[in-house]
Image (cartoon, rainbow, N blue to C red; front, side):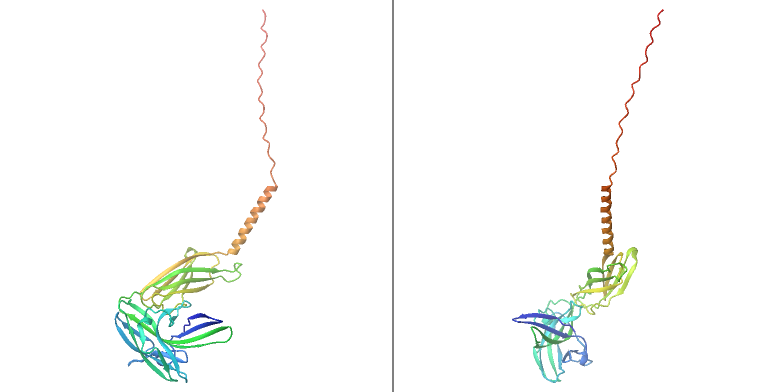
Length: 345
């Protein structure tokens, strides 16, 4: 179940329009998408029930099929039927479809139910044919979507904040258009954020690794992601197969995901590497990290600054006496010997 929502401003009232699309397999015929009040599912084939619509067509081809809407309540229900494109939600990468007012580019633009509105009596079913025309020049590959039964009634609450709810149930459509297929996945914008205790050793150090998983090909992928972290000297700190990833990554879709890392190092220098793989494709991306107890570093830095200031102040108070340079000694003039009087004869 996926619940995209929109908020609409009206005079004096804030209306929250919450559209719940039940697209996962549930109980009932053909594993119908079900919300407890009504269900939507493909008409059964001669061989077996179908959980979803699995269709294939070439550009320019038109195909037909039938969808069943079952009312599980005792009162008649009226629905609007429409085809919608599918996408991955930003929150968790789940399978969701566009609302009736959004622009469609694939199945939502190509499929047309025979009736746009249908009333189903209590505890009864109604089968509605639909056609799907793939236009010339359509891109090859997968085009996921759904045939949706929307209850257009809006339930209003009380109070200044009014929350209105519209519910819808959709049967998934997996359409593959003929032509070359290219499975391709990319890992983008890898980032790691550390969360360390104020005092090293007194508390657990954690980290959060965030990244974007991008389907750059034209087929739906069932991705697997592996996380590895290495520290200084190539030490392996972490090796983990991630589980918080979408089971279906639709063509062209990006999903921003996060992975917690408990017990991350408090002092280390290394990198984390994320490797995504699916059938026919594999891609990796890395980001470096420098884990350091910043509080301890700040205390040491402040202590060093204070010690330097005190040392300079002490040197300023105790000045050494100036040493007087002695004057050079005067040189002595040698005396001449007196000449003795000459002896007279």
